[in-house]
Image 1 (cartoon, rainbow, N blue to C red):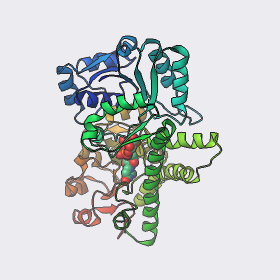
Image 2 (cartoon, rainbow, N blue to C red):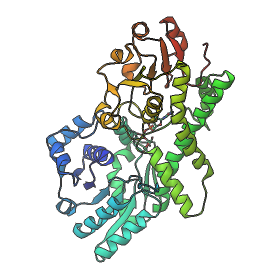
Image 3 (cartoon, rainbow, N blue to C red):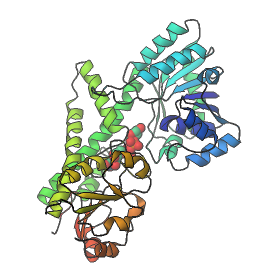
Length: 437
Ligand code: UDX
């Protein structure tokens, strides 16, 4: 199959590389000339484990290439995927679809007959209809079908998620489009990954409903963590206890500082906007969004309360800035609201993140960036673990206790236990766990 991927951002690049790894011929297109030039030299614009090697292998095998020229790249394609960004529109939270529609226009002008145009970007219900309308208007005589094929890739685990998906969702009611999509995903089909064919609108909704449900699960366990702290329970035991029920499931029940990232915050807001447009209130999702925003701000209060003194001019050390490990992505990271709250109280923040500091620097102009965890701890009033990078899971806690001004460890991801921290001479506060004081 000849596949063209429009948009070589996170989703486009990972999907394009994986499709080429299946043996398809893939061209990844982007307007950004610098990005394409870098990719042509083998330099990845994002950090994703395994991606650079996969790209190099498939480029070498002649199956994967990069281009700025959309028109010539879509000409002979069997499928053209739209994987451009759909950011929250400033001010109103609606998904900004201008890049999707612009891509649809350009594709329609150059694509040949018998091609399926596939929305991979996360787009609100009905966007496929609009893409189809745009294409029909520009190319009324061409045989082009529009399908929806949402992605469910987690940053940091995207290649594994692509190759061993829980399911593949394809929204089309057209037999020709269905056949092409089936051929594209054949390697996964043979792997017995379930392929779900639905209507285009259902496919669009599945993506938003999945993310909203996962955000709900996280927010639920975060609130249980607050209750555990109040009543003296342990949220990890509660999560294990409820997660063992197959109807609930054990995943996405890690209490923490609130969800962040490029998907959950943006997609929950966009879903609420769709619901508003169709006068169908989603009260559960509304509460999730509110609770998560409140939680991110509450994390600063938790840290300040644990320290319990005037923080003006005092140092606090932070480990981890990205919204989760194995990514350099700082979008909507809980660290941003936490740092804001701590700086408002007059604290001076020193921080270290294994991959996120390049993106973090411009967002956090007052933070002092260190190049390793122990410097972060030196003479600080407290050390706060914000992101559960593996590099922070085996710290020399005794050394940390010796370096800190006040031996206080706030573990917002529960990667240590009170017992081991105490043994090292640290006072420990986790999330939703009993605290001996
Ligand atoms: C998510 C979805 O998982 C993916 O299917 C979708 O396509 C895009 O959005 P991603 O944003 O990469 O992927 O991250 P994910 O691993 O899902 O984590 C999102 C946020 O939730 C992170 O801030 C993470 O720390 C938080 N989280 C996740 C928790 O706090 N607890 C959990 O149990 C799980």
